[in-house]
Each structure stands twice: as C-alpha cells, then as structure tokens.
Amino acid sequence: MLIDFFFTLKDAKLPVSIREFLVLLEALQKEVIAPSLDNFSLDNFYFLARTTLVKDEAYYDKFDQAFGLYFKGIESVFDKNAEIPADWLIRRLARELTPEQRAQLEKFGYDKLMDRLKQLMAEQKERHQGGNKWIGTGGTSPFGNGGANPEGIRIGGQGGQRSAVKVWDARAYKDYDTEREIGKRNIKIALRRLRKFARTGAQEELALDDTIRATANNAGYLDIKMQPERKNNIKVLMLLDVGGSMDDHIARTEALFSAASSEFKNMAFYYFHNCVYDFLWRNNRRRHAERFPTWEVLRTYPADTKLIFVGDATMSPYEILQPGGSVEYNNAESGAVWLQRFTSTFAHHAWLNPEAHNLWPYRASIDLIRQLLGNRMYALTIDGLEQAMRVLSK
Image 1 (cartoon, rainbow, N blue to C red):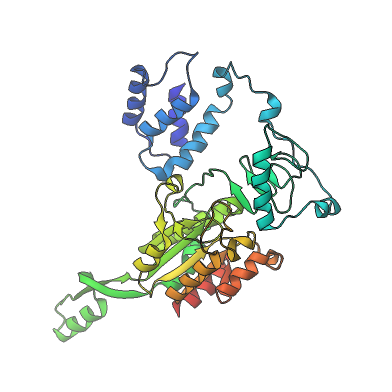
Image 2: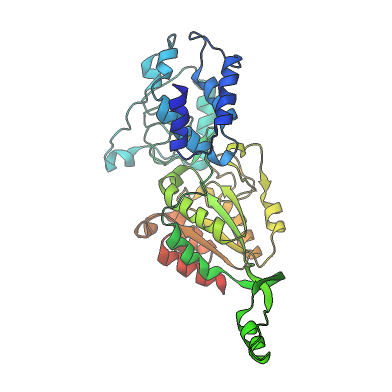
C-alpha cells in the first residue's frame, strides 16, 4: 500500500526519493508511531510521513493534497470509537435568506457588537445551533459560524458568507507556490517593463561591438573584448494578502508570485491578511511564531525600492479605518495609518487587485484603499500589470 502512496507523491511532482521512503519504512518498523490497528492514528502517520519525506516547507501544500487524495476516507477504518453526535459534526447548510430577511437582521455596529459578545459569553452555558441570539452555528445571531448575519463575529468553524467584521479562530493559511505556471509567460513579459539593467562585476560576457571594432583596427586579426554582464538591479518589495476571500484568487496570485520570483533577483516578500498592520510574516505555517515588525520592514529596504501590494482589498471598512478593526486581533493603529506610512516611505508603489474590475464600485473597502494609494490600484490582468509597471518604472 505504501509503495502506491510513494508513487502518488511522485505523481504530484514532490521531490521524494527512495532513500527517504526507506527512512519512513524503517521508522514504522521501529514503531515510532503505534503499529496496532486499535491505536493507529492517521494523524500520527501524516506527521511522520511529512517529516521523513518532505525536506522543504514549500512542498507542504502539495504533500497535503496528495496525502488527502490517497488516504481519503481511510480515517473511518480506525476511528471506531467516535461518540460525537453527527449533528455536532455536520454544520447545517447556509440559510437562503431573501434581501428583506437579511435587512431585518440586527446590525449592532462595531463597539456595541463587542460589548454584546462579552455579555453573551458570560451568560451562555451550553452549545447552541440556529436562532438569532446565542453564540452558535447556522443561525442569524451576530456570533458564531455557519450562519447569515451581515455584520457578525465568526467564532471557530468555516466561513461561508464572508460578512464577519472579526474572526476569533486560529486560522491556517498556505504560502503561495512559486512553481505555478498558469499564465506565467505573459506575466513575466509584462513584469519586464520594470527591469533596470546595469553592468556590474567582473568581465563576464563578450562585447561584440567592441570586438568587431578592435578586430578591424587590428588588420583583421581577432581581438576579443569582454565586458561586465548586464544584471537587473531593480529592488522589489511585494506584500501579499493571503487567506479569506483571497482563496478565490490563489491561481493568479501564485502565477504572479512565481513569475516575479524568477524575474526579480532582488525581491523580498511578506504576507498580510486583508490590510497591513503592525506586523507581517513570511511563512504562513509559522505566522504566529515568526512575525516581522512592520516598522522594521519599513526601515530595512531603501527608498528606491518598488513596493507592490497584491490583494483583493475586500474587507469591512472597519479593518482599514479603525484601531482594533482587524478581524484577528486588536491592532493598536488603523490599517490606513500603516498604508500611509508605506506610501510615504516608498514613492514607487502600486496595488494589484485580482478581484474582477466590474465589482470594484460595489466594494467600499476597495475605494478606500484606492484613495489611500493615490488611485494606484490596477487589475491583476496583463493590461493592468503593464499599467502598473509603467507607473513603477517612472
């Protein structure tokens, strides 16, 4: 069975070797995890297999997909003693509400919403599902998950309506894959408008014009002339929105990220969620443990660095304008303040938006960010990229 699993990983283009596979088999033979059927845990096997077979975190996402594809449904073979009621595990389908019904749902406003949540957490003693008051699932209450409220707080679970103004959950995002090739060629051609070449370093390449001229002056005897290689010395700082509504745009964002990574040798990148605040991160699996203070990022890169934001700019206006407006924690300063600091530090900046351009007028947050960036927001299309590169190259 594990041989087929090994070939499944190879089919997913994971760089796993026979040696690493033998290490996994040796670990199983030495009972690093429980070998018996009664005590076997697919989770334990997953972590053991990932540790022995995957040596680069950039491949974790591909490993997860291949593992899930191969072992889909096998967990039920081992989980014989599960006693959790099915209705606790299966969230009710999102309710289909008419516009009139949605308009009737109570909209608290941010401050009142937080006060009401504290009150309910003190009063509520048990799980609740459906309804419009308690913290629960599948209802119209502003608190919980899986329901429908135009301005609520999601607590745990999966998002569906994407209308929460704050999310209380340990959310796991995934790094963008630098190997995605979708549209990469066209994107690279557009990005080349930003390249700035200079001859630096030792003499590395043939100077054809000088060689011809020197040979002619030398009565036809070959006189080879060399010159330093032309290298792209442009500096790029890319800040990428990840998670939430950006999940709808992963393919194009990965194509952009992959193209930019190969096109710009002096490129740094960081992740943020929805809007930039007082910290950024570079690895989504360690984003709670490895954070980079935004002040440090602002001071690290020279002023002539080209700054590129990538995000759909789709969020609650609270997240941009109000301290504490982040959906994940209470930020001391608003996102608008941090955006202004970035645009003041880096004169050459632009925002690339993968959201369909015809939807921009219906997103209040998009209009806010466009204003904060001096209208330098461009669609993540080939035409939009070319416009952004022209602005950044000036």
